[in-house]
Image (cartoon, rainbow, N blue to C red; front, side, top):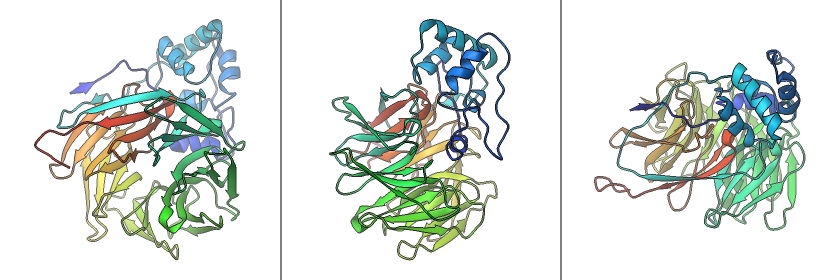
Length: 426
């Protein structure tokens, strides 16, 4: 069943668009050296207020590239970013609804199945922080990166208590991971650092990446037992940091013009990553940091995130093609399945729980949680209550649930997965 919903969603802005801002020092007018020209707002009542208000925090391209909203929708959207006096809110939302109305977008395809979910969402205290990646901590709390505000956040889902931690200016944290001592590590994508937060003291230490031409630390993955963390970089590199010494090792990918994106460890502690700029998946020797690339059969494949099941098989979301993929490193075999939302569904965040694959569709209204059973090859989908606004990274909790960061609606989520029907046990 295809459903078009009245949920007021956030902008379907690709991470690459956000990176274009952050990696270049965030151009308030939406332009950057060597990039597209700045966005020019149409003439009309409210234009000056939009120009003055919105460019304080982000480029105008976020408005131009949005899905668009009604006046009430823009007011709800603005409320997640900043508090405005009622007259200003009315003027700005009316202008935006006139010049940036609702655009056509695929509706969510809702499929029934054996699982049940309950989705809870909490608003991040700092408006406009755009929570990017989430982390399921060992103590049951949920952490997230407040990228636009240079903050890390912690939520206790039982009590609802939320605390935010300030990071050094301009860090713009992207991904995060936890070491065995409970310290939270993050990739400072704008500043070019790997950071560590001690939640007990609030102290932060950052380790700068000094190699020329290496920029944009992106997604981390922790190997706590061996006291190291691996991470991808926008500049076509993969890195490793020693948790005790802070020593950073960087390796360039064998191919040029690559964009290492999501990264995970297999059961042997070997990092695997996906290349969002090519039809490639990469594996990294954890000792030597030598990189081996594995080509996917479809030349148009652009995998964005991945998860690894207990049998060390790689599952990935092919964002631009709207497919879920499976790559077996042992045989080299690749299989793909069209996502329920179609070729424009933009599959993104992904994780696996007891052999079941869970991922998000970020290009449909509302965003969806998708369940895929590899044994039956059947899909089930669930709508995100707030619309989602792009769920970029999933992590599973010890209880078999999923934590999310919902960027555009400025919310943190917990997806509680119910008992499956009797025809399947995990």
